[in-house]
Length: 145
Image (cartoon, rainbow, N blue to C red):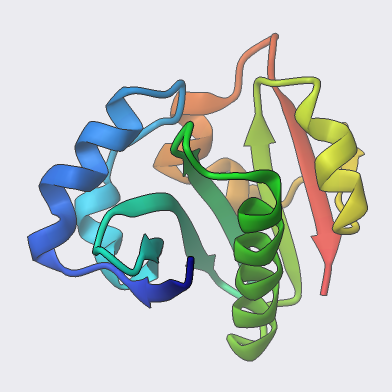
């Protein structure tokens, strides 16, 4: 089966909110960032995965990674590789993300992300997403591009 990776539009908003609502991801403010939301879409038009690459100064904040249960690991790897390429095209310096799933750390390490404790810039900490997502049970990860 072939897939298409594209930027979200307003027509996708209902599906985006439904998918995010079925996960532990934070959807706050996502409607303001539609141009930064990337969709992994099947040839039949079903959205199988999504992620937002929020640009903040020279850095990026990956947020709201949601993957449909029917999406295989190969698809997730392909999608994530393309997103890393898009982040480089945007000429971002560093990428940050917040995860509440310790098991995802190994997957993210494969893409060069490392856990950071105190090395998070104030412009990332000040984002609505960071403020609403960072808790005691979450970890912040960073990748330099």
